Amino acid sequence: MKFLAADTPNPVLPIWQELVLGLIAFGVLYFVLWKYVFPRMEQTFKARVDAIEGGIKRAEERQAEANQLFEQYKQQLAEARNEASVIRDRARGDADAIREDAQRQAREERDRIIASGQEQLEQQRATLVRELRAEMGELAVDLASRIVGEALADEARRRGTVERFLTDLETAR
Image (cartoon, rainbow, N blue to C red; front, side):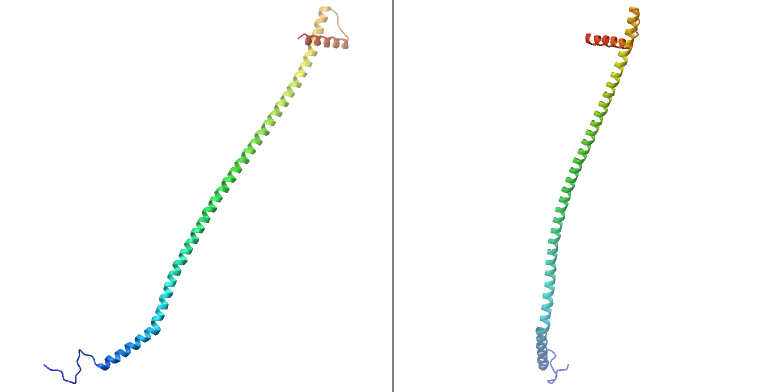
């Protein structure tokens, strides 16, 4: 076994010069980190936090805007439905008015046709009554001439006699 000589360094204990140099290097590194790196890292962290919080805030704003637009959409939809209902009711009213107008025109046409038909019937009746009177007059004159045995030749006299006879018949009723 070999024992360590006095001039060989102890492997467990570091050399004091290395220890001092290590402390100075650590101090310089700590100063550089504390002065330049940590503030930049802090700025980066703050920027990230601001970006995240800003993103959340923007998302909340957009969500609120979307909710507002949705409410506007629902309101416009309700207005459109109300307007459609008004238009539908107006169209029904117009259809009813048109139907009533067509029915009124049909009734007027029907009444006109009935009046025209009644007028024609009255004219035909008057014509038939005149023809029947004339024929009855001729038949009455023929019958009277057969009964009396004399001929009534004068047309004016015969018409006067026929007219008196028909008037007497009408008054006798």
